[in-house]
Length: 280
Image (cartoon, rainbow, N blue to C red):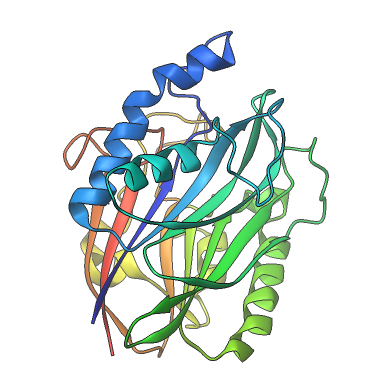
């Protein structure tokens, strides 16, 4: 049994920002099409999006995220138009860039069980861009069982990363009672490879950096180019990851950088990572 998982920070509609939000969304149709085509052509099973933008003044739907302005929902709707059904679970953390609800979304070809979202940051206010809400789900993978996926966008080391990661671990541990056979954390950690916050994740051997496992010689290869929000005046770093819980019956087979102009055009200020697993 094989399974593929993509993580990508969507940049909250900031690739083509303009004064009119509806014109901004129209200009991002290019990104919607590129991402949907990649998911379809590569037959990706599970997708983790961060910085998913939704227009602040659109009504909040139930379940959250089915607004026409929600970028993850736009991608999912395109896939469904092509006959590819993906389940979606998403929630939002805070208002980003003054006019967008900004959150995380999980898409899955397989049924999603025990969907949940929770704040891992000390602050839960929607008007504070430092508040961090994570989405978690148990993917019911045929002939394997439940794969627990946590999709995160955490703060910088000096702005709450350590507290947030510990809260995240407690949340995940509380959900292992569901009979989980695999456990993955994916997303934007704002923790540069090799620095203290990174070692806080992998230092005890509980989780394994999947990119490093396959490409140790590329350890410091950045997950973005140039200078981006939150990392201006810093050299580019690897801050996007897929971590697998050590010892679970999953073996990484390949890990590719995508949406980097070499393997699909860029669609964000971050590159994406596509992991393929063999499940036992």
